[in-house]
Amino acid sequence: MIGPSIDPTEVGVTGLLWLFLSYGFALYQGANLISEGSDLLLLVPSMAGLVGGVVLPLLGAVPDGAIILFSGLGSVEEAQETLSVGVGALAGSTIMLLTIPFFLSIMGGRVDYGLDGKPDYFGKPKLKLPKAGGLLEDMTTTGVSLTDAVQKGGIVMAWTTLPYFLIQGPALFLHGPTQEVATGEHWWSFAGLVICLIGLAWYMSIQLQQSRADDDRGRRMAVLKKQLQKGAVSLSGAIAAECSALEARAAAEYQSPNDPSTPLTSSSNGNENDDLNPPPAIASYLKELLGDGFRSYDSDNNG
Image 1 (cartoon, rainbow, N blue to C red):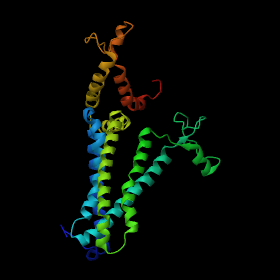
Image 2: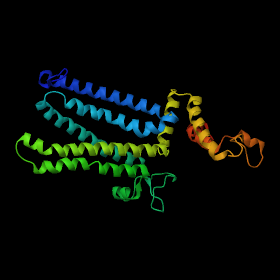
Image 3: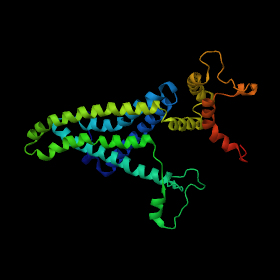
Image 4: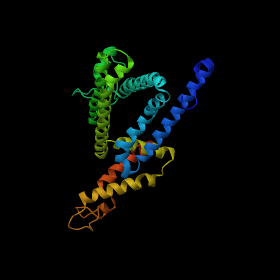
């Protein structure tokens, strides 16, 4: 066995519980550090696309990859058994994340359907409970809206089952000694590895395209608001880089191509007061960023 090893039979129930809590705490702290660090990287406009499309998915897979890596350490005989445990733990955690949190997010975010049969997010109240028809009516008259990113993610997730079937198919028909079965599955497992690598590159490409299309704008805005509330980022620091990026993008849209000196905020009606207004893109960004804070101070709701 590579590295220190503790036999569960030598530590007793209390020692095993302590190991369980210690391992869980280490994973919890590590996941929090990865999450906070990656969220801060999203605040850099020049890196937001790369971070949101490539870095975050890879960092999210680090704990799972570490479980499989350390499960395979040691002799071949021990690795065969420990890998089975590691893959089982990985599959169990993945299934749990795909079911319980997704179910809770739908239950917590659902709203009543409008007259058009679609979720009405502008209704007051958004969700009327309890329903006269009980649980059945609750399930048929409430719901959430899915973005294109969620739908594409579901399709990609369905395609990821292909490598499992690729290796599971031959495993159902190969019988005999372990060495003979391993030899028969050798090239099938290699084909599965190649497909997984191709799928990873394809997935990263999709994520990068979605991030560059500004599909993760809501997430970046939520992270920025959170950091502002915590005092980790100043207001000037929060808006400086983003406004610079928006201003550069707006230059091509609002600035005259024949007159580079035309200011971005120049008005078409000649009103000098309009020169003090920011470009529409920056104004929209500032309203979205400062809206929650403004509403908390707007006690009489007069805007």
